Structures are given as C-alpha cells and as structure tokens.
Length: 184
Image (tube, rainbow, N blue to C red; front, side, top):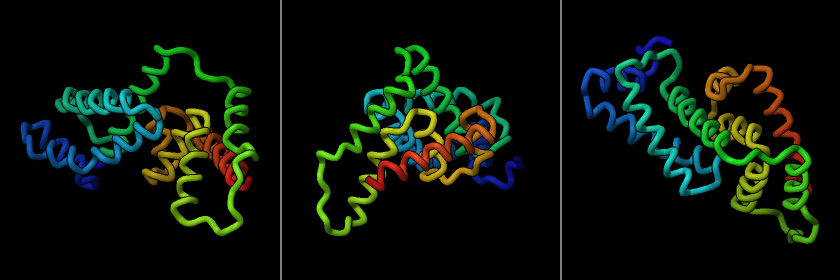
C-alpha cells in the first residue's frame, strides 16, 4: 500500500521520524474504534484496558520499522487481534462447538417474552449486540471487523491472519446464526 493513499500511514511515518503530534493525531482518531473492537471482542473491561495499552505500546515500539503495507487501521487491528489470540492461548481452552450451541440456546430461550409491539431501533440494536456477543470468538471477530470497522474480506483476512475463504465461511456461519437468534 502506498503511504500517499492512506493519510494515517503518512502520520505514522511522520511519527517514526520523531513527530509526536502525528502520534497524538493517530491516537485521537483511532482510540475509540480500537477500544470498542477490543471491548466487544473480549467482553472484559479489565482485559480490554490491558490490551488497549499493549496495542498502543506495540505501535510505539514498531514505529521505526513501520512499513505501510496495509491501511494503518488494518495494521492496528491486526496488532490488537494478535494480542487477543496470544492472551487466549495462555488462558484455558475455549468452549467447544457444543458448548457454544448451548450458550446460543440459552440466549434465545423462550422464557423471555417479547412484547407484541414493534421493536424500537434501540431494542433491535441491543438484540443484535447480544446475539453477536454469543457467537464463537472467530465468528464474532469477523462480524465486528465487517460490520463495525467496514473492512473488506481481504482486510479481515489480513487482520486475523486467515485465508479469505475462511473469513468468508466464518462470516456466512455467523450471519446464519445471527438470523436464527434474531428471528426467535
């Protein structure tokens, strides 16, 4: 990727040359997006704070060797994603497919009645957020990157370090699950 195409890459290159105001501009522009991505992915404010700080620390330490091969935001999300994966590897094993299905079934349980009136926009968005939170980690990550960050399949593949077809498949399964949960 040409740095001239991405103004954020230009800022990062300026920061690498010692321009602290360039870093401040990058931080101001991307901190909210990064924090929301981490919080929605991890669902743990304490871990989110830790990884948020660690991500920016990695950006700072990588400034001298930064090469704009992708959009800055994609590179930033890739750092955050890799830190999440490293943290998960150090933790206990993730829930298997059967456990994830049980969790989805609990969320969609019929004992929570919905009123017959049309849901407000807020209620629809909150229901979507809850449904996304119940997706398996890999599916949740691709959905958040696609819907909230509006990344292409190729950019998501770059962030997650997986193939385009794997991303496409995870996105398809996630959307199917979301439709199922939201239709109930």
